[in-house]
Length: 483
Image 1 (tube, rainbow, N blue to C red):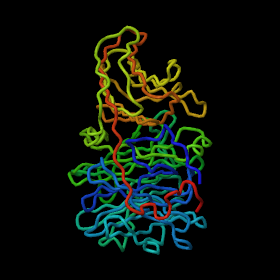
Image 2: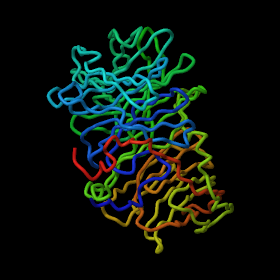
Image 3: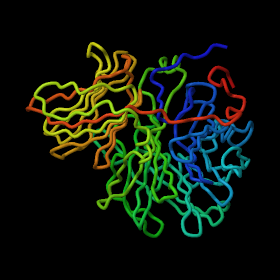
Image 4: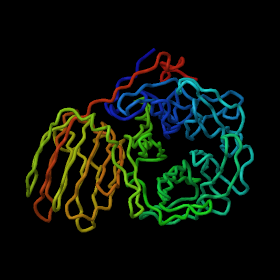
């Protein structure tokens, strides 16, 4: 049996197994002293197929344990062709997972469940549908999100309606078993959310962040022809079982984040993980033997103005290792600030026009640019030259940033970049440098004059992941064998 070669783009500080396909984060819960993070997983290859739930847990967001597969399709059962997306809750001494039961012989993905009574190590599937009767007029139905409220439980299910509206459908239950349909919690026809982007015809993976009477709905936009598109957020308040929403906004301004999921932490924080898909040719993915990763855990808050703000979880500061760049000054041209490894955490303050360049090839031909556009009031991330391999995608992406001086935090982990601004806005993208580390950080002035800068960077330590005995459940070499 041959062994797949190591891929230099495989991250060291982002959650994912060492091989095979992953997508949506699922089953996020805190139970019995552990954060649980599941995800859509194909244990047999690097394409979207054979959907199971992979599973990690951690006591501290830094040291992770890979558990056996949480959910596996049941031959001939309601989930025979895939255990698709959903979430999990902690209920006394058990965890209950709610998920979409996929069969190729029906259009809907109705809700079913499984439960664990040993802190996620083993799971017992329900074996039948939780909600067998679907609402009239639904043309898409998937991805339950369940939460405790007061003395009962509530559930949202993503949907599309026959009249062209996308919807998040609301259910309520006293015991997690009997569910009453309450109607659309939020629905709406497509409306613009950014230039060339709208809120879509269908919503997947609904998530509800709520605190102090206010809330925000996170919705993944799905198109019946184009598939997954982007994630939008509506801030607002609930009234009489309906969500009264303000204008929609992008949750992330980059091209490579989808299906974010929330976890209410025991200390009152809301944590979020998203799926970052690949931005490279499918043949390259097959050669590498893996696809997709989960973003860093993010703390999510609701600001007084109703905006949703994100920042890296505080625990991640512990992953900072050697400080390799400490530089401040003014340049009218290009200033070389120092070098970093292939995984690093950087903070910067930029004044006036210009920006930073991450140079990843010895000849300077390969680089990722982050620059301030003061006229547009935006921060621009340009990956058109970020890989010398033509199989990597390019593109230029913008984040609103009207401040006269720009502060940012950039976390790069080999093939993923996550950009955070003090406004709480984020931008996530994938890129694939061909040059080996160390990489060079430069400050570069714009055409309008000099650039003032203050930059610090730390190499990232890998997070710790260990595999529970027999975690692969007979699939230790799953990337190399068929189902």
